[in-house]
Amino acid sequence: MLHCPYCHGWEVRDQPVGILATGPLAVHQALMWRQWSDDVTLFLHTAPEPDDEEYEQLAARGVGVIDGEVAGLEVTGDRLTGVTLAGGRVIPCRALVVAPRFTARAGVLTGLGLHATPQEMAGQVVGSRIVSDPSGATEIPGVWVAGNVAELTETVIGSAAAGLRAAAAINADLIAEETRAAVAARRGISSPTDHDHGERDLAHRDLANHGHEHHEHADHGRSDHDHAHGRGTSMTDHSHETPSVEEFGSMEEFWDDRYGRSDRIWSGNPNVVLVREVTGTPPGRALDLGSGEGADAVWLARQGWRVTGTDISGVALGRAAEHAAAEGLADRIDWQRHDLGESFPEGTYDLVSAQFLHSYGEMPREKILRSAASAVAPGGVLLIVGHSGFPSWEENPHPDVHFPTPEEVLESLDLPDGKWEVQICEEHDRSQTSPDGRPGHRTDNTVKVRRLPE
Ligand SMILES: Cc1cc2nc3c(=O)[nH]c(=O)nc-3n(C[C@H](O)[C@H](O)[C@H](O)COP(=O)(O)OP(=O)(O)OC[C@H]3O[C@@H](n4cnc5c(N)ncnc54)[C@H](O)[C@@H]3O)c2cc1C
Image (cartoon, protein in one colour):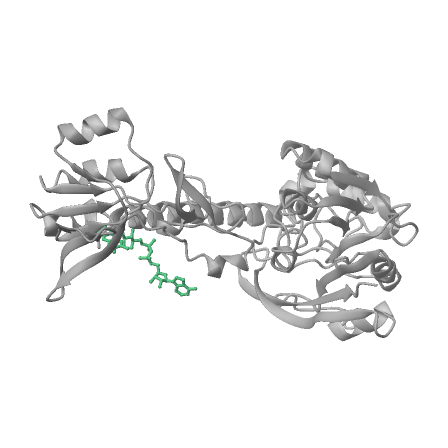
């Protein structure tokens, strides 16, 4: 039983070859195999009848056509010798060609949010694959595919070549990421470019009452460039030119200023835990708290969710709205400005997401997360992801700044007994690159709770 003349044609050259037709591509298969043997028989079996033009081509190439279903194979001494028709007639044959359905073994990618989609040829589904661009880039940032999982007609050498192309594209992506981080470090602002983590990467942290001392990274980036622009953007800069929360009339002004300092401060990638936990969930209404430049909200909208994105910064919301419009998703996302300690979006949601909702200044995080729980519709989910501590390269963390454990986050939600199911309450370590490009790690935590249906 063979499927590919390029793979197996030589071995059965000049021998009687049958084509077991099961779809409209069978005539094409017969003409391909005819190159290897002048004894080719097309068994129409369950396929549609060839049209007049195809019959003429088959006749011209001397391909025999046999009507009726194939009922079995005749095997003599462990070798195929014939094909048995439903009526009992046996047609001599040494190889039978089939049209298998090539199913991508993409299970390992499901957790990353990728799912195989059907691949068609001449209007017929011939298998499945992960959709990617010519470099192998998928719809999930940071994930490339190569070989048969991306293109089911690929062969060994083509798969290897695709692997090379993907490797070059990945390398280019890493170079760009490293360069962005280096430029950010040189300018002295936090780097938002780590693929491991998505949008909330390095910067937000709860420094309540420590707003005048945001030691974001090790001492890098106090460059002439910063001073030349007179902006004092270094987060490590202890001088008076570093803006602190106290220098602003409100947290809103602080964040607007922070977003206004560059065209983009986060990576543009959705947060990894959000992607992992939401993938496969039927879309409904989602609320994204602290939506920043909109990567999470846009990703959710792309998955079919109707999203409300909220942030304290109008600058961030404007940028997020542009991002959504550029993706053709403007009508799926409602952007609302809220200082969540003061006001909260109305309504209930099937998913409420709070990804790294930390702030430099005072922010009633526990109160906000309780409001978030109240906004979850019956059957819906609240997903909270936050930092558990400082990144490993922070040599002098503030001992008096407390990052809550997942258990403390859960407890602070004050969920009534018997009404919620705790699905995740855990810490997880992840690799992260420091702003100056050194490998490091950071511990985060995830709390996922589901409001039981009423
Ligand atoms: C019968 C047959 C004959 C062929 N003959 C030829 C030929 O003569 N010449 C030619 O050029 N091409 C031939 N091909 C096509 C060729 O084999 C493929 O194009 C090529 O192997 C694809 O390479 P790949 O790396 O994309 O996938 P594969 O070679 O299929 O490698 C994928 C690997 O991933 C493993 N894997 C999958 N999921 C997991 C997981 N969750 N965890 C760990 N491992 C996992 C699989 O076990 C497999 O080893 C043939 C194909 C078939 C089926």
